[in-house]
Length: 322
Image 1 (cartoon, rainbow, N blue to C red):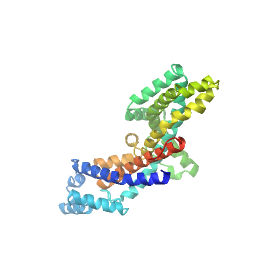
Image 2 (cartoon, rainbow, N blue to C red):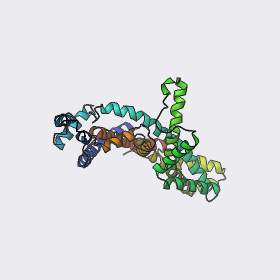
Image 3 (cartoon, helix red, strand yellow):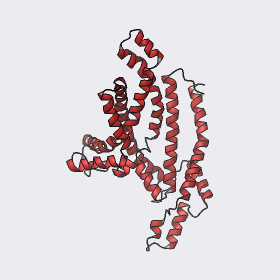
Image 4 (tube, helix red, strand yellow):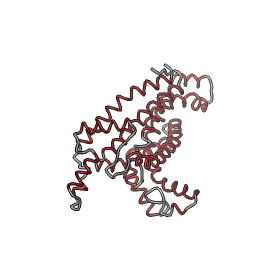
């Protein structure tokens, strides 16, 4: 099967999956015991007629089935609806998605730049100091909760005043020239990127180490060594390529987490990203906002898996697309 036909087939297969995800997500949100207008009902200055008008504006006075029908009809037309705050959901997502995309893309880049060489070094020097060092480092990364690591970085920043705390820019951001604006944003990204990189490092490093150790025990590697090929050629030319192939699947999942994988870090560090916006939407039962975020995450996951499968085909020609 050619790649374009395979991609078309996967897109068509994804449509019913997205429909099922939307139905399940909508049902679970409706079952949540949260009143999206609780803040209005708690305010004695707001009349019942005003609350009724707000219910009608948001469509909350209609049965759940009708609400879902209206939501999915608007979605097909490209209208993501209005948030309970009155803002357009599409505009809200676009404002925050860029911030989260910058954060997640930098985190994934640094994670892979560190984890792949670290995994190779640990596998090649199995049982030696470097292997044990990375073993301890990744164990700490896997066992430490993300929010605790974020708090430790915040305390370090508070004690040393070397790094800014919270937000994406400084208060005098618009008074700076373009170069210093970029530097200001990068400085604010150091702590959240460091947290996400350290937490994600362990899984990729250990997977890379295990894959390379398995490949180094393969028959063709022993044959290459028996022929007298230099060890570096055996490792980096023959073994490493096959060891990296399984990681491409993980790269697909990493792609899915570009917009949704940093919610907790964003919340703890007061970073204005999509994850924090979605969490706030869940706590206030903002149906249109949460549904749009969930569907965006599902589309990213499906796209990531598709990209991983296509990349595997190009990396390893023995793989056939069916």
